[in-house]
Image (cartoon, helix red, strand yellow):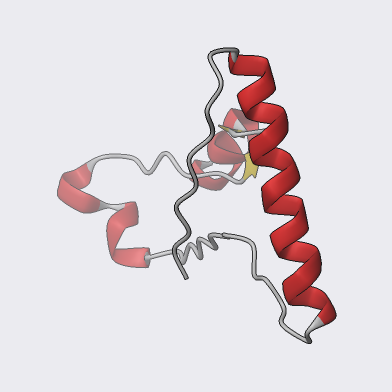
Length: 80
């Protein structure tokens, strides 16, 4: 579903208030009619590949992710 709406206002904050009110009203109307709205989501699945561990004789730099960063101590423990 694609909805176009035009608001006649020059004030950005007022435009955002109108836009939010319209979107919330549309969501409430659809949900009361039995529709469910899915929110965008993304899932990433990582799988270890044993062939990549010794690719071209280079040491593997793998570890688990914590707060968006690879834990280097886990990577060092795996290569030991």
